[in-house]
Length: 81
Image (tube, rainbow, N blue to C red; front, side):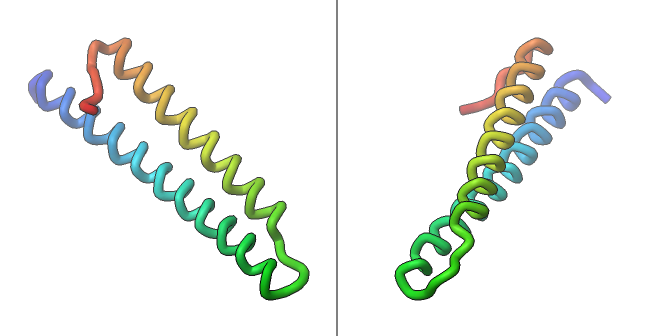
């Protein structure tokens, strides 16, 4: 396998992983927002749990994206913007 193919595989993998974490973070925030809205209509919501989950998933997603970008940068590979 040529080096350019390996670089493209790494770029694509990094993009897919980052996108997957972004999706999870988006879904977590979706649930948090739904919980906040539902408090106006019923008692006993789970807002703290949803917000905590959303924040944790977002932090993890950002950390993984940054670590991946740094790792690829050390290999001389830049992610496309």
